[in-house]
Length: 101
Length: 408
Image 1 (spheres, rainbow over the protein chains, first blue to last red):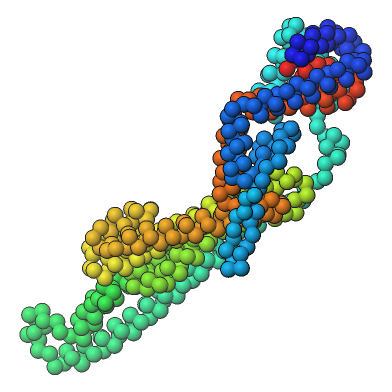
Image 2: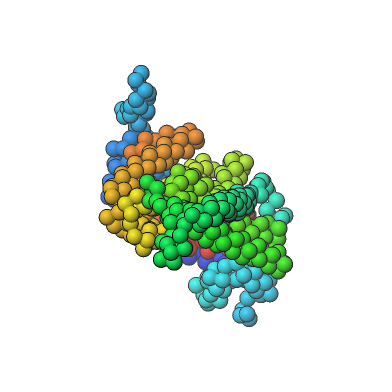
C-alpha cells in the first residue's frame, strides 16, 4: 500500500506543473487519492490499536468501566469496540452505588 | 519580498505575517524552496478575511462586563464611621475633662498649697487620667483605644485624599473608554477600601471589638474578590447564552474549566478568611496575655497565616492547631464540592462518570496524548482531512493543495 501510495504521489508531482497552468486532475486520480488517504488512515488506526501502550491504556479504561469512545481515542473515528460503563443507581437509603456489568 | 512569488502571494504573506509571523515565514520558505514543493497558485485566494467569508457563522451574544460597586460604598462607609466615632470620642472627652476640671476647682479650695507644692496630685483630673490608663479584661485602656482611633482616622483621611487625587488624574488624562475607566477606578477604589478596612480592623482590635473586626474582614474579602466573581459570572452567562454554538466536547471542556476557576476562587476566599481570622484571634490572644507591643505589631504586619502565627510565638497558644484543622476541613469541603460539580458538568451533557472514572479519564487522556503513535495518527487524520477537503473543491488550486497535503 505504501509503495502504491508512493508511486501515486510521484505521478501527481509530475502533474503539478500542468495544474498550475489551469488544468485539473482527472476524476480517476481524485478517487485514487481519496481511497489511498482513507486506507492509509485506517491502517494507521489499526497500528495505533496494536500499539502495546495504547492497548494497555484501552484495557485500563475498561477496568474503570469506560469505553474507548469516552477517551480521546474515541475522537479518531475507528475505535468503536463497545465496553461496559459504570451505572450509578441510588439505593433506598440514599447512597449512590456503582454497577459495572 | 522574494521575486519568485507573485504580487498576490506577497500581499497574502504580508497579511499573514501580521497575525502569525512564524507561519508566514514557513510558507515563504516552502514557496521558494526549489523543487521539493511546487509554487502555490494563490490567484483565487482572498487576501483578507471579511464578514462575507465568515458569513456562515452564527454571531455570538456577549454580555458587558459588570463592574464592581461595593468598593466605593464600603470605603465611604468606613470613612463615615471613623469620622463619626472621632467626633463622638472628642465630645465625650471634652465632657469628661470639663467635669473633672469643675470637680478639681472645688477640691483645690480644700487642698493645702503644700501638697500642691510637693506634687501630690490627687485631684479629680488625676483620677480621670488614671481611669484612662486602666485596662479592661481584654487588656485595652481608654488611652490606647483613643490614640488608635485618632491615628486610624488620620490615616484613613490620608488614603481618601490620595484616592480622590488618583481618580481625578485618571479622569482628566483621557484616552480610555468608559468601560476601561470604570475598571481602573474600580481597581483604585478596591485597593483604597482594602487599606481602609485593614486600618479599621486595627482600630476595632485596639478597642477589643474582635467580632466587629471579623465582620469587617469578611466584607473586605468579599469586596476584594467581587470583580473576579463578576468576571467568572459573565463567562458563565456568555457560555449559557451561546451554548448551542459549541460541540459536546467543547461544552464539557468549558464546564470543567469553569469548575476549576470557581474552585480556585473559593479556595482563595477561604485562604483569605483563614488569614484574617487567625490574625484577629492572635491579636486577641496577645492582648489578653499582655504581650509586648512589638509582638502585636509583628502580627499586624504579617502577610500570611504562618507568618502571623510565627510572629505571635508563645502568645499564639493553640491557634495554629485549630487553624490547620479548620483549613483542612474547608479544603476537603471545597474539593468534594468540585468533584460533584465536575460530575454535574458531565451529567449535563448526557454522560455520567463517577469521581473515580473522572480522575482516571483525565490522566488516561493526558498519557495517551503524549504517545508517539497517537500523535502520528492525529497528524495523519489532519492531513487526510485536508486532502479530502481540497479535492472536494474540484478546482486546479484545490488539486495542487491536495497533492501537497498528500505528499505530507
